[in-house]
Structure formats: C-alpha cells, structure tokens
Length: 150
Image (cartoon, rainbow, N blue to C red; front, side):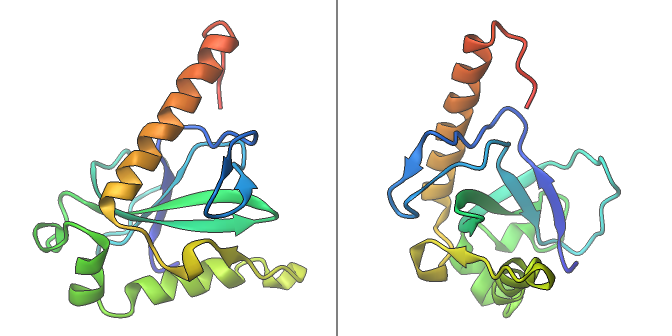
C-alpha cells in the first residue's frame, strides 16, 4: 500500500447513527487513519499525527470514515494543514488512495463508493467527526459499564 493504515482509539462508528451525507450507519468499529507520510511504520506502531481531512467510504452499506493524516515527524508535515494542502504539495496522493479504497475488494466483486461525491472533507469537518465518534465511544462504554472493548 502507498500509505500507512491504522485507527483512532476511543472512537466508534455507531451503526445506529446514520450520517446524512452518506445515508448509512457506522461500521461498528473505530475510525480509520490513513497516514500519507514518507515512512513505513511497523505493525502496532503508535504514531502522533496531524489531521488533514476525511473520506467517507461507504463499505458494504456502512459509513467507514478514513481520516487522512500525516505523521508530525514527517518532513512534509509543516507544509500540510488541511486537505487542500495535500493536493498542492503531494499531487496524486489523494486520488491514489481513493482509487485503492474503491477497488481493494474488487476481487470479491465489490466496488466501494464514497459520500460527498468522492471528495475528502476539510480538517474542520474531520475534527467534528472525530469528536462525534469519540462521544459515541464514551456512550458505548458507559452503557456497557466501562467494560466495552471495540
């Protein structure tokens, strides 16, 4: 893959919450992170990242947020503050991972779709989405008596 793939802890994509822009509920797991920096991180690495934007993947009828990030240690991090900066300073990067996400299940006959007409959303929208999914996670943990592990 041309990017690192991970997740944000203490977030949860609630399957009962339908995102108006996708028309689908969450996929019942934490929100995913796509890190677009130059370094390949090892499995299980904990990486401090800068949030740049988000893609609303619709996977098997569920909203599956993909937060676009860059490691704060990456040489490009100082040039990237929002998703538009990625288009400017890393041409083709967004189109590349969107196409990968669209087709990665095509061997099973599945071609994924996206909300927002395939357009990543800016940092402000992304931060609100992270906050919303964190609130869903807190509610889930409270309902399970603090024993939830998602």
